[in-house]
Length: 343
Image (cartoon, rainbow, N blue to C red; front, side, top):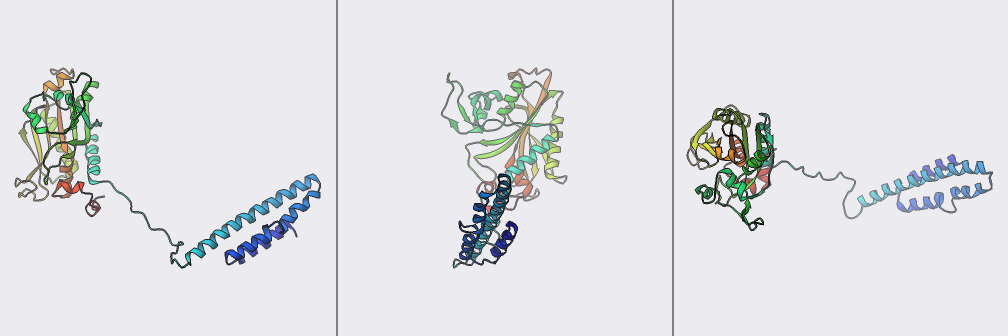
């Protein structure tokens, strides 16, 4: 029997096998030691060398093809047998789709805020969450014993440097990175610093002990408060749309002079007053101001030549205003019924 005729006969017989027992009989018949293919391979040993090589290559190709066909048929029959077994599981059915993850609303808000400032020429930088007391307080015009430190009661780390002069803490704001950037950069400087911050305080509908900020800094010649207001108004327009109202009021921060806070009309009551906005109709989203000359001079900037502004946004506050959320704690409870609302 010629090889191609043998191959055709074997494949036709393979299609007729209906179960694994029949498949095993087929294997013994065509691929077994006493099968026609094995006999053919043994018979070519008496042929001349060149013809033996050609016939051997052809026979091995046929054998390999039949083995592959046998493996494929065995897998098909095995799956069919399992799908009809007493277990009742039909494994030929498509698998159940895995649910797709999505960005947490805080993460998405982070990205939107940074994108808004990047469109205005700001660079995004990040810094350490465990910070030296020097960068978190002293370099920002908050020396030891300053009353402003009471605003930032926080979590201290049981570690000091070799000289014992600079204790560490979980940062209370991302402003320390502004100082680090200025130490290594000559003006002009335009950066925003996103990150997680920590403060020891009671939680309520608008406060958490662990939350997120995006702080920013711009330093250059002839920067004024008008540049600050124009930048923040434009960011508010990009984040909230044209119809939302913004308000600036004078306030105190030790590292800026003068200082202001910026508030947006409350998304829950639209200015009527509710528990979220403490009845004021406004929800503060950031503090800002002109960088204090003491901060600039500490990093070696010429305060007669350079001025700057700084600001810090509460990311959770922004997300609450954008999505009409009335309790900041919902972001951290990992309730999928809440988180699935955001895309």
